[in-house]
Image (cartoon, rainbow, N blue to C red; front, side):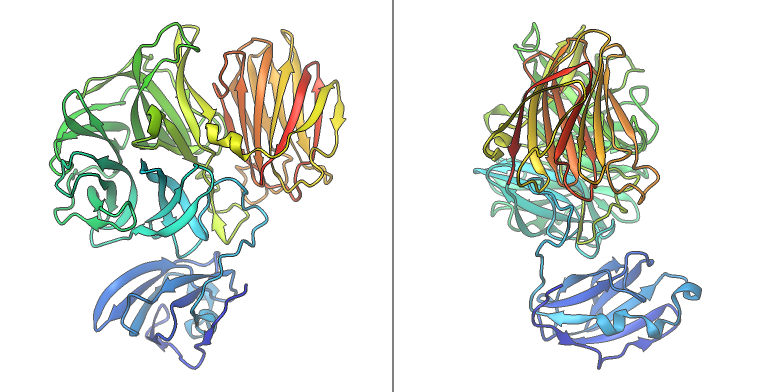
Length: 590
């Protein structure tokens, strides 16, 4: 790690108060205090005390005998002289004496913090934080040509803890610029998931066009709070009347807000244990309970989280109707079809007071059939009436253990959502957003492949970031496999079975898998038996997203998103079985 401007602090020794408690006096001479982190250790609670008052509290896995990486504590907002009050929670029998911890020797001051990528598996075209941990996308909103992506963020380590709202912006949905942290924990608790809206008519009184965030304050109990920005999301001010909604439920979180024109009120949908609840408000401050939904519907194997409710019109090209329906996205953990976390959805109607589902209570519809597509939510105020969704690309079964350290987790590519009808059912279609087309490099034509044909060197220079398009022609009761593999024998198999009417994704031999017993897996999705399938496969260092159009004119009826960690890029393709893969084209993405 190249960190310029370090100041050694070894002359300062901690005051040891007990075998778990120490204090360290800091005389700030630089912008950052670099905290040494060791991921295998237990959390240490760090209080920053200025003039006898706590001004900040955070949790970090301070290094005991080995430094995995450093994280920066910004000192610019503190008095130059302050006290670190540190309580360790590790077992002294295994960590040794507190005075010998390596963190005292390795803690440094610096005027810079190096965020240069040092990770083999950092994606090329998926959003990631510069450093630290990321999970649920939050507050996604579009304003004045800028897409705002907020997210659950831990700036003090690459595992879940210290929930802030991180912030990135983009003008094309692909290239993201990191912004300062938007919302930090306060006296009401950590900042859990939520949403943002643009208050065009100044209903809240913060100014016309104010960006208003509604989020869960996760303290001793979970409650809902708001904050507002009048400078385009650069800075937020918390509302002095927080919290704005409270309840005695232990799981009461993840507000998604939208304006309902028919009743001239804001609607918020909240995840509450095993159901969602709807509230309405004229001003985003005063809320009235309306109804609840979900106790008898869908999957209940885990806690419901991160809901989203959106109106959509049936696509005339995909259906015989252009009627309007409402889709309720509902994330669940655990309970996914292949273990861990996943996104289910319900189709029905919403009248401003309650949601009525058109599907049978026992039916569960999944938005994505991979293991790594969770916390899916859509952008508010998107242009051209688009419905654009992004998901967290991981799974709670192993998210804290995936083989990266500088950062953990990426987001899925953006997807435009549509509705279609198939065999009398209404389904959600996830199509790669049009912005992905602009990412394509020069097309490399690979022709046709059948019966155990191997195509080597998909790209002459392959850094593991590309898109494959092709047409798979199959007959009834056929089986076919499209395998991506590298020269080390690591592979992923995308198999098709028209007899079983399914396709599958096998990553059991994909590369690094031993970090979790739950990672090596096979996922399966429905496959309409049309015999002709248009494929779009997005590969990016450590992920593969598969979209299939079974002849309906739109890809992504039953998509799959899966992480992979190959030791070198997949640069070869093999087709086996009785299918014919035609018009194979590879687009490098830089």
